[in-house]
Image (cartoon, helix red, strand yellow):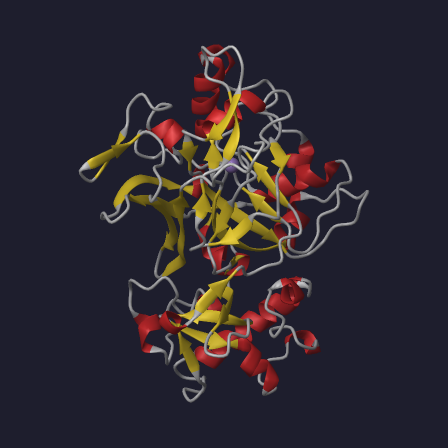
Length: 424
Ligand code: MN
């Protein structure tokens, strides 16, 4: 079923030695795109290969790489111009880059930039951000904590991917510090709410899907077309303030509790690189309506891990799970998102929703890992119910097969809440 070609050949090796190490996230079969600067500070598009970066803007300027014959695809400091080109051009460009880096066919005199010398930037101009809620285990655990076991899954959950329209303005690249938000909070036994810093700051382990091809307003898309529209994936941390969320979320869903920051990893792993790791969605408890059926496998087998490092302390792994457990795939989410006629645009970002497994230790946020603070999670010599100032959270993801398709890291450190302006 996967649509494989020469770029997926496990026997391919690169003239970049570090790309041939079995533990690299970025072998020649991966070729994720990112936006970097080095030296002169100019933002440009590159591809990760081992511990190096191939500067695609330089390859374009010299005429070695001209996707679809278009102008300045790689020199604009975002991936949107590439993503707006048709998927056949994405595929041809990937094949060309793979050849350029191939040990037999490539040119080993092409200059590279060391990743350690580069600064990574937000890889896309994010048009809109939608966050879904597609892990059944996560929805069940959170529903139980917020509403009791009887009402854990709302009646609509098994029939459609639930989501909300989030904020694109506060999507930031990995490595950007996150300030603890202020919000309106009402303690369960308090008579009235107060404004204060969140005391229940949390992370959410998610996969971010990036829409390349737009859809027309008024026209729903099929799951097949939705799969093709998707350019690639990143790791996504949907930072969440649980004390703000629990007071504000009814009846319209989360608002300020998730609007203060969303981190994504800098390297966009293409859908094509993930082709060999396609995986079926889980068994259905209730039959899905026809528009949500997918003829082929649309989930991916991606191993995921979260580590937490207190200020100055070593990091400890606090969760391990897998994206293949998602009840609704990106293709199903996009089919649902466009059913009403909602238009999708190049650069739209879709969060999968927190990815949790069934076992303790596989939950994708502290709310679940610590049972809403009742059972703090061991972190080295300390423990955590929710995040402290100075904590650093790092998400990692990779596919494991004859080679490793890695996502790199998505990291963020918590800064203390800002001083309240006069009158707040
Ligand atoms: Mn989320």
